[in-house]
Image (cartoon, rainbow, N blue to C red; front, side):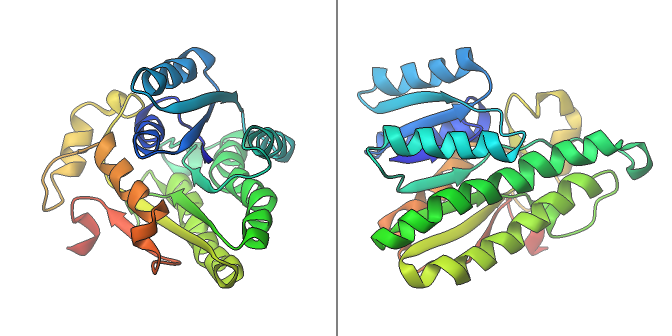
Length: 241
């Protein structure tokens, strides 16, 4: 059983569909029921298994409820967790309200923390499991206007390493991917700015959501059995230059 948060669109939806193609029963978690059911329908139309779970992930209790419901649907287990849900407001630091700061850290940092706290111990008890956190390339370097978003994902990177140290000895692999500019519904509003940001990397173009999903699928798969605590850039080479 694979639980993917923020799976109703973009990278999350692409990941859910790809994992289902490769044989996983996928739980599509997100806020928008209509979009979530559309993802489930696409999976089922292709012969895969999927169910939608409504989840706001705005507080600890929401994360705990999701973990409980996912475990129930999984017959008592969740084998794969992809922490993809997140928000990415950009803007000057001085213009970020206390509510903005709380919202970003609640979803980008606290939700993954509470989900891992609920699901990883059972994985460790069984001796197997895989967790992938979806970070960002701007967790690696400073960008004006991205202090709030970048810092939340930098925290997630450290959590990835700490969880690898904590749960890795018990058979649970924890890794992260750092996407670069990616064409999704959420980034459509960036317009030409997305292309300009992508042009700074060797690849010279934005990624498609499926390209990020391929990296996530690799990390949760058996062929990545010796990969633990890795922060994998999937950014067209931007952080390499």
